[in-house]
Amino acid sequence: MEFENVSGNLALDLLATLWWRRDRPRDLLAGPADVESWASSVGVRLTDAMSVDDLEDVVALRELIYRECARRLAGQIPALAPIADRHSEIASLLEIARNPPTWPQLDTAGRLHQSGPATALQSLVARSALELLDGPDAARIRECGSPRCTRLFIDRSRGKRVWCGMSTCGNREKAARWRARHPASTRA
Image 1 (cartoon, one colour):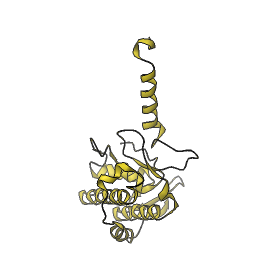
Image 2 (image 1 turned 180 degrees about the vertical axis):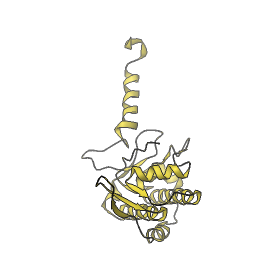
Image 3 (image 1 turned 45 degrees about the vertical axis):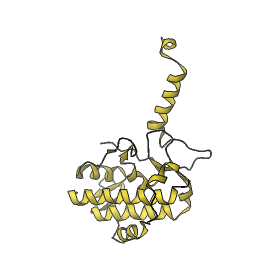
Image 4 (image 1 turned 180 degrees about the horizontal axis):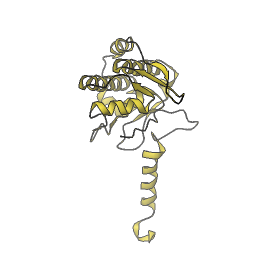
């Protein structure tokens, strides 16, 4: 499985492992190996094999972060309002973040990566979520402008970024607009 981590934040990249939340959810973390693959895609090498319990903990963390984002951003991103809850998830995030995080390590080629067990990966993600939600980028969180996409991302553009990524939603939306302007009869 290939993961596209374009959200601008580790915690938001974890949220992006569940596609199309509102209409036809597709979970990219279907098994422990998928979490290992995602961790590798964000520069974390797990020291132990993921278990089913570890998978469930990572998925629970992902949903906890999403609920907290919805709670904080419901006024800014109207699509999040239906799931926004008054109950804060910060205490749970703090508890997970208190676990020892991953540690830096060099691979055989001299490239830096993070290492640790599943609990360290969760701690790293929880810390990333806390720093995001309490930092200056919290006001820059957006939801993808594509009708089906529910990915959240940090908009650091000068204008206003619309799509989560140009290689996925941006290209699809631009192609759809082009097809709408150029009916099949004129393409031949």
